[in-house]
Amino acid sequence: MISLRRFVPRTLLLRAFLLLSLLLLISVATWLTLFSLAEQEPRARQVGELAASVVNLTHAALVNAQPAKRLNLLRDLAESEGVHIYPAEQDDDVDSLPDTFFFRIVAETIRDLLGPDTRVVGTVNGQSGIWTSFSIGNTADDDYWLMLPGERAETAFPWQWLAWAAASLALTLAVAWVIVSHITRPLRRLVGAAREVGQGRHPKPVPEEGAAELCELAEAFNRMSDSLQRIDAERAEVLAGISHDLRTPLARLRLELELAISDDDAREGIAQDIEQMDAIIRQFLIYARGEGKEAPERLDVNALITQVASAQERSGQHPQLNLGKLPPASVHRQALTRAVTNLMENARKYGDGEIRVETRHEQGDILIDVLDRGPGIPEDEVERLKRPFTRLENARSNASGTGLGLAIVERIARLHGGRLELLNREGGGLIARLRFPRRP
Image (cartoon, rainbow, N blue to C red; front, side, top):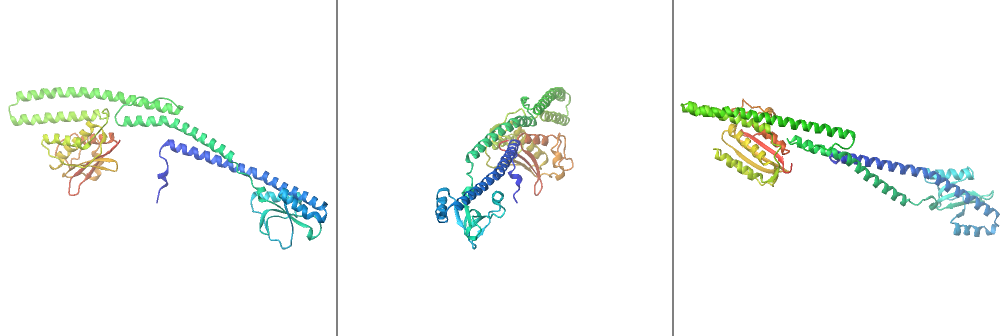
């Protein structure tokens, strides 16, 4: 069954314009209906008065005319005035007027002027019109029918009024479109600025113009954006200081390690601890800096993955590549490189040696799958592992880490308008899928 929600416009501009258009159309239709009803009664009374007047004039003419000349008089009335008069017969086949408001008023007007016994019908012996009975004597032979053609009850369609109404409606709809677009334009600017803030960038201040409520909204948004930018700058400054303060003693430890410790095994173990501490600091800084400052560029995703795999091979890994045909995509090069690298590193730590990377294009989305043969992840832990500083100790705990790798990938996926999916493989293992649209 087709849902009507599919046909409802999604944008505020179209929704407001369609609602205004519907309101205007209903208003115009209502006024046209009221105008039609208002002009029907005067026109019906005019037709009834015309019929009564013609009956009175014809009655007077027939009464005063000589009986021998009445036939010629009836013929002249039919030819010159379009008024047809026929003798009434007992076996005439008559049918009433249409049961409409207009013809009811016509019949009432004729009876009010000629008397309640006057017969007003719509068809006599198969001939349609406005038929009115009258008599010029006291015998049945003196009864007549006067017939006005049905065209007398018709009115010309007011095409000129319809043209003016259509032009007025078109002008009103154009003005309505301008008004609605003027209202929604600041909202569209706010949406674009909010999207940039959500991706870690700092947009230009939104113009504070328009209605008072929109000005207040833009002002509040600008204050929020300035506060976030100030907080981000202070955070970067603090992290830079922390990085310097921590790496300086690490450098001294490396130097003292080479000079003071002669045991090769102890020296190698302490060196590994120092490298791990340095890697942890580097991972913290990467997560804290964010990825929003890099501009997107159009590139071949498969070529980028091949470069990442080559770098991994130089460090001793051997990822298998199964790259499908992909169209060029708009991506942040460094951010996407970091995301794929983190997924490969995660597969190396927890994946039991096997790493396979697959790509494909599916319904406008670019899919990058990094597969391993590790123990997998429980379904109820998937979303938790995407948060920073979280690790799954009971299932994939064969290596140390900061708990930031997947959180960084998730944030990079959101930067590209996509998401990170963690799926368990059949037969054991994990599929870490980075999905994002070709055009974010």
